[in-house]
Amino acid sequence: MNTEENHIFDAAELRKQAEELARSREAEQPLDFEAMTPEETRKVLHELHVHQIELEMQNSELRKAQMELATEQQRYFDLYDLAPVGYCSISEQGLILKANLMVATLLGVNRGALVKQRFSQFILKDDQDNYYLHRKQLFKNGEPQSFELQMVKADGTPFWAQLEAVAAQNDDGESTCRVVISDISERKRSDELLRESELRFRSLADNGQALIWTATPDKLCDYFNEPWLAFTGRTLEQEVGNGWADGVHPDDFSRCLEIYVTAFDARQSFSMEYRLRHHSGEYRWIVDSGTPRHDSQGEFLGYIGHCLDIDGIKQAEALLIVMKDKAEVANRAKSEFLANMSHEIRTPLNGIMGMLQLLETTSPSDEQKEYILASLQSTKRLTRLLSDILDLSRIEADKLSIYETEFDIKNHQQSVLDIFSLVTKQKGLELDFLVDERIPPVLIGDEARVRQILFNLVGNAVKFTEAGHVRVEASPLKGPSKNCFRVLFTVEDTGIGISEGRIKDIFEPFVQIEGTYTRHYQGAGLGLSIV
Image (cartoon, rainbow, N blue to C red; front, side, top):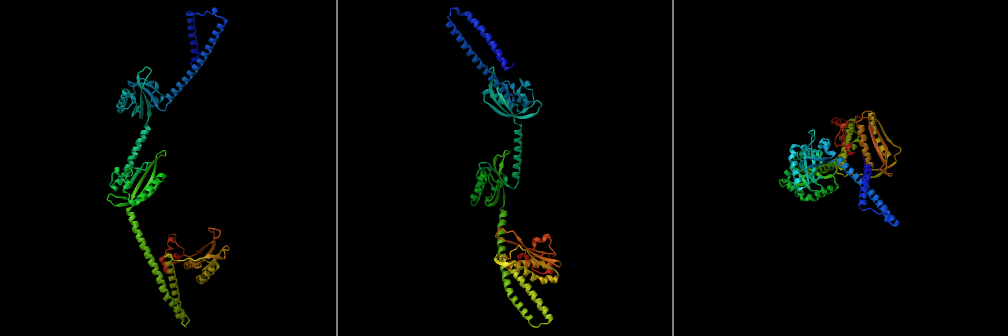
């Protein structure tokens, strides 16, 4: 029967009872309508009518309240039965008096079959004493109990449960307890995995060489591994919090603290070097790298850092700096020596060349002319070598000046063709120098150095080419601005080439691609390094 039908039934029953009561009262005190005046009769009827309306209104409100109460009761029972946790009531003797659907699901038993069952039969044997102790405490002093234990499903499957129990009374006034049951098996498994992970972490941390630390979100360190403690010779209690900072070298402390705090506030990784006091009392250089830590939900947990002892590396770096300084001093001395020697040798060499040129003006025999020509060629080669050595020493000493002047690229084109045309003709080579028409006639740069570079590149191409051609091209390049024009010079030849593995070596001073080439083609290997 639905709620509306219940209300109709209740109203009919109520009217029946009211009529019986009215007849009983009329029998005890009958009304004498005949003695009443018409006015009194109308007044009584009016009062009865008003009273009837009041009763009908009260009855309507009562039915409305009853329906709302029924709805709330239904909602309560729905919430109770369909709750995501188990609810059950247990008597003082330990019997299940009432249980919702989740309890039946957790225990794998039909809800109807749970009533009057002993709750303890669903608790793992090893945890039953724990259950009895809490139940006794609850009924003894009424204090709420919260505890964890292992329960067992009807099929014998164990699971971890969290129990929250409070004292209550049933409708008969008997003491009971209401228990909330939550399945915490997943949480327990997660806790176990976390413990295992922490054990693995500590095992790895304590058996490695890195000095490892962790810090909480308040910037205070809460863990240092065994290698750290062995390095400092201090206990964990001495190092936690800000205790570790006592071992930082005073000259490094402010810088170290600033980097640490700044990175921590920005939640950014950091790496810094500082000196930390060793257990021997000396300060040793370490590199300390820190990284933010987050949980699976992205919540910031603090930092983890690892440090490595780099004191040996620092000492080696200091030694390298000293050696580098010494090498630079020696290199400058070498450059100065080469420059001075080049100047010193050039003077008598010029004298020899002058004498040979004067000797040419006499009347030597044909044999003597050959000797003079060979001597002049050797002298010119030696002069060029001295010039290259002098340029190289200036470059290494950073004293080679570059001048900006106006020059005509056509002059460089003609100079290259004039200088090398005789040699290329003798070797049967084709020599070309092509200038793109888009290049302006007047350029700005160091005319002498441009010529020197071209002569070195073309001279190399001619030297190492026995057949075919040598081609020079000048083409425009896009400049960094509208007022800047750039030129690309390309030198191509059909010579012997060079293996890819040796390309990186050809710009080193005094290096040629093969020792045999040096003997065959001559040259000191300075041209490309100067270029």
